[in-house]
Image: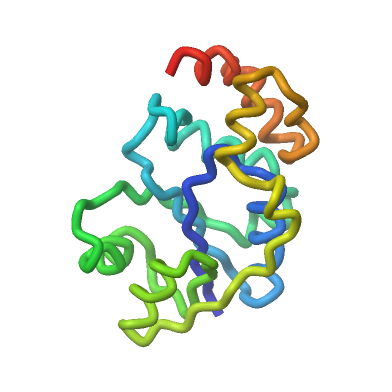
Length: 164
């Protein structure tokens, strides 16, 4: 069985890592869609799709990486068409993993099975909050996998976030 998990991953944090592990406990292969892949250098989307891909790939172990394929999913300005847009980019999948109510509704309308992902530490594992912590020089490193941390340090995320 093949699953689909879509996220912005701005940045890829421990909650996202848990979601990948959970999804892979339910499917044989996982398609990861990097949403808003055409958006970057914005307050809400500061990191490029390639940077986010690197965060994901460097955060997964070799065994997990073999079960994952990553796709870029740019934004479209037509919510009703969005799931069909996704289908034009990714291969066939059997189930979608999402907690986002809008995403669940859009895929559900098409009869596609949607599974909720158990949320762990949602109060601290938020991309928005992590970006604020990085920008403000607060402790953030324990909220992201080591691979993401290395990418964020290499690209000087603090400087980028400060200048947006």
